[in-house]
Image (cartoon, rainbow, N blue to C red; front, top):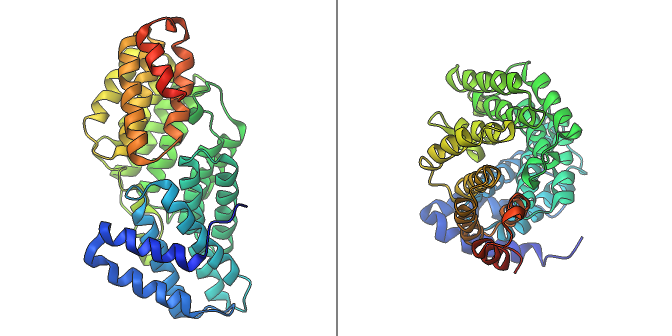
Length: 349
């Protein structure tokens, strides 16, 4: 693994950058960081565990505000600190709590690495998250980690239209675990939304709509308060996923893979109009561009492709650029058009 500088320097930079984002809310994270630094031996008492959980919460809240390339080293430093503490002499309860915090942090780091296109690191992080969540008996984070891991094995982010066995196996395990109860409606909805995408890749239209109905039911049903279980969980990380059309993006992607390009464009465009999250906007513009390309409307496809590249530059993600290169293959019949040549210059710069 490439060196990324002194951990304390990374944490100081994190505090300085995040101060501009959270302002007065910095008091709690700064206190948490001081508690974490105070522990130099491999022991973790309850106060340190509370500080570790607070710092994980702080880093999760930074997702979407800090570019992934800046957030990743901070998450890496914290995850190394947590995994080191797991080697210490801990009570059963403290080890379970630390395992849970480690799982949450590994989820964040893995998902952030995926935004940078670092697939191997993302899969390794999420495998750690799955194992740590199981060790900590943290069912909600276990289900979330499996769902996140499924996305790192899916061919959808890379624009390849075929099913992935590992992605489906992770989702099947998440579904089986979620039946035990205690998992938030938000997490279950997102899990089933991921199922819709994988079902669409196999052209299983019945499976797509069945999974969507389960996702809608999870959002409309009674909610579980994860904080009462003693786990922080990652529902804040899924804050964009709400009752006001979040499933629309997954439905649009599924319609496109089922071959209903016109319906997909309409559904994706409607969802795009309801979000202000630049990461979600980039994902939606990507899928709209793909649908237009497959519908043989190259000018509109190129227009949305440029929107993706603008947003990728703003958010500091490379995943969207990689996905756009997949979309570009669908524009190959129009490679001689000036608009497509201009896109190529920018896409492969």
